[in-house]
Length: 90
Image (cartoon, rainbow, N blue to C red):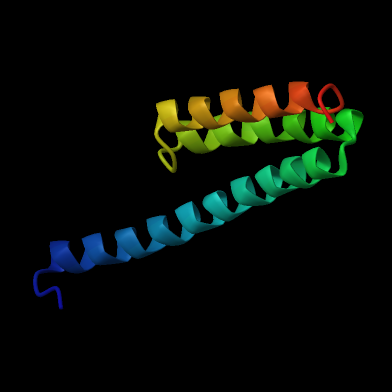
């Protein structure tokens, strides 16, 4: 357990930040799940709409430090390719 006042404050800050990051990560996963579901149904229009909503959410998480910038970009790139492929090769 933290002993000094500064360490106690740091522990409180970490706790708050962890909760915020957890919420952000959960929100991103929800958006990604919607894209995945649209891809699996084969509905290209729905997949594109879900992807359009998910992309800024992922980049926002990256800018807040929840994900690394390259990780977010990689996820977006791979999702984009999967959305493009929907309906073409069934």
